Image 1: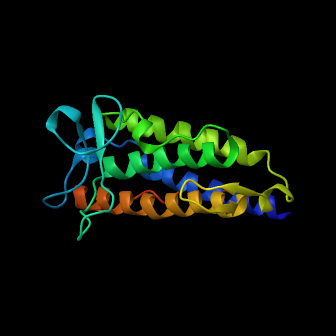
Image 2 (image 1 turned 180 degrees about the vertical axis):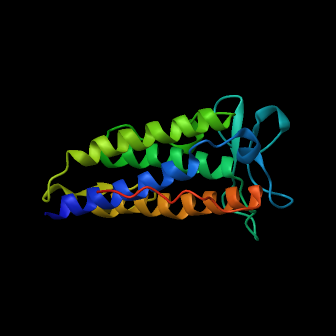
Length: 186
């Protein structure tokens, strides 16, 4: 097994775990605010500040406020989908998208569909990689050139991090843990 195979396996396990944690997500869970002042996905008409070209925005700000607000599941799903698309384009494509250019969906179903599509398209690019490819440097959206391995690993880490948060928020919202164990890969 080569380095590219190991990288693909790590990414696949991270994405499968994230998919399990958003399966069956409802709008009630998606928009639930576990504390006052959360960042979320909101109608643009509400005056919320953030990114998004359509009717909805994902609240955000740079530099972030201190303290950084707690975020909803909607924010986390949107964050994962948007950054997966941006990393894919910067790592494997020629387009240079920005957060300001994304169309933020306004339902759990549409947000999860975007996340799954972004994962599928990212995975398709990673499937083509060879061991030699993963050492190549590519421009990163945040500045310096980084190896493809680093950029792909960053997406895996983001999915593990935010999917775990989504799972905890769903458990807290429901008042109990999930009975079903997460999926295991062969």
